Image 1 (tube, one colour):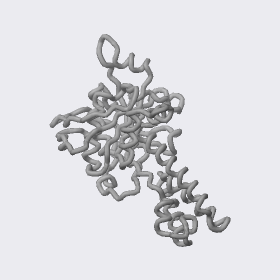
Image 2 (cartoon, one colour):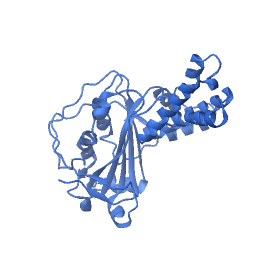
Image 3 (cartoon, helix red, strand yellow):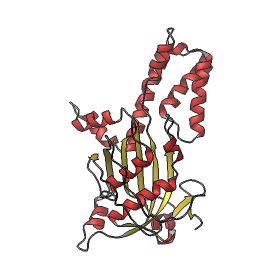
Image 4 (cartoon, helix red, strand yellow):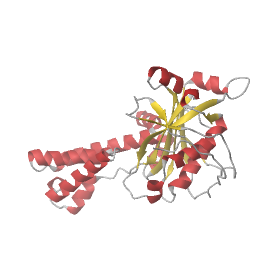
Amino acid sequence: MLAASFVLAGLTGQALRADDRVTVRGKASPEYVAWKFGGADGIKNESYVFMQGRFFGGTTRDRVLEKMQFIDVAKSLANDLVGQHYYPADSVGKANLIIIVEWGVTTVADSNYKLLARDNPMGAGDTDAATREAMHQMAQSERDNGAPTPMVQMMDQGYEMSRLNGLASDAEFQELDQKAMSLGLASNAELVGFSDDLRADNESSFGTAQGQMLRAFMADERYFVALLAYDCPAYLKTKTFKLVWSMRLSMRAPGMDFRAGVSLMSTAGRAEFGHRNDSVEVKQPHEKSAHVEIRTPVVIEMDAGRNAEPKASGR
């Protein structure tokens, strides 16, 4: 059971690193943006409750990321959501928004075929039974953890092909490998909010500078935090989720620890929460204020997935 509440105080800005650039991609309807930010009386106040979403642990051992609890991520976000007049609700029934938070790190889409071919002169498709079993166990482990990487899942099909039909051919393994890498890149792009920009890059005859930059970013693992803000009254009435706005933040993982990264990503989003960006923006975050106090946020959880009624954690 997650702790239900906390008070933010004494948050100190983290020292900036060599590559602390943060990518920001916000989506919201024009009607919502006009209502929220376009009134003569200034920015509208809205209340929210947090809900824990999916966690993506990646494939590289990251002790800081592993130790970070959802409540720690929520604290940093709550500190900066106030910048766009989003405030913690006293209870679920009084909240305007349910903000589901997903976080973690992407995986670099290396070629499993090349790795297997390097160690096996007979061809990647002619791997021994022990190697195929190891691949299968890796895929099964990722499935058990709830966030399998597409790359490993696709290569696991090679295991099934070998089990049912004998050894898979090199051509079959190369085809699976290419599909796996494409799926891995697409999955990463969706997590960090690059999908629309990369789609525009693919549709351009000569590519785009934006697409080239984002593909270079994706060559490394990236920490990310995604906020999905849903209409809370609509949910309580109909038990369906109506997306109001979303924000995806990411930064380069190598050379950065996740605790510092969350602080920097949240700070970069401070002026953007609830807004919409026509494409991915790259920001240089500034340090947080030395001391911030806001009302106590509430964290809710669901009993049986996203179609179940959220319950407030014990206070």
